[in-house]
Image 1 (spheres, helix red, strand yellow):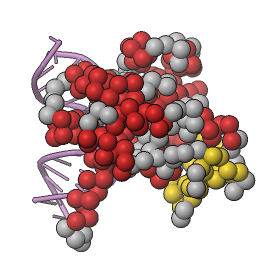
Image 2 (cartoon, chains in turn brown, purple, cyan):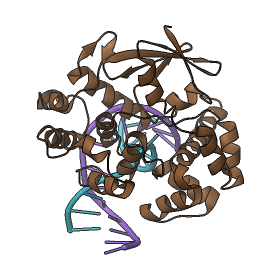
Image 3 (spheres, chains in turn red, cyan, purple):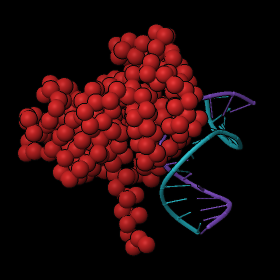
Image 4 (cartoon, rainbow, N blue to C red):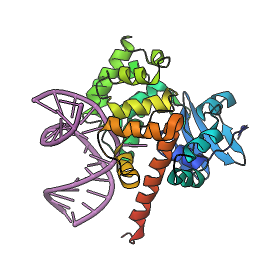
Length: 278
DNA sequence: CATCAACCTGATCA
DNA sequence: ATGATCAGGTTGA
């Protein structure tokens, strides 16, 4: 490892493995993933992270070192006993600051697919269209996706294929300016994103949260919906649930969402391994 | 405005 | 082994 970044609290396994980003894999005690045009290696350390092949400042921004995580944890912990317990259990789970284009394209593909399939779709698109880099492939730029529609169909994206092409076309032609979205407030950002075919409430919230610095976004997917019903007794349409999260957890609602998501994920994997696999 | 079926595909379950 | 159901939703009626 070529460097060490001091950052705490940080639990690399939770942060990279919780499913907010889709290109990280763990090999032994090292995490390998692609950031921009580099294959990056990370390893958990005491009070920080050892890193290879990435500028420290870039990594720091990606790990949201500028977030006052302790303060956010304290904030959402005050909402209720369950959140307090989850913050304790999953201390060090952080949000990431992902690249807006990559995040948008990825979550466009993520609709109605399970985690395994999301990963395989993203990897095939990268392999087919991304710049080859040492040890892998970069996430393709919009214009690269338009390179060969036939090969894109080979990526097994299903009905998401046409949506991705359309998005890439609109970005390439300047009809959509991704970086321009970064300057908008949360509501406006969501509204603009939803103007994209294949981007609804949930994807717009994910992109706002994971790439646009809108920590008040509270994406509600199938897991969170079940969780809100089971633990908070609330149910209803998307808007209602998302606003429930925002009003209950405040400006750090996005962090709270990650803790709930992680909890449901853990419960599920427990259930799977409990009755003796065969 | 709320509801609801259809939608690609691959994994999981019965 | 083969069919139903589900999975990080969105869309259009």
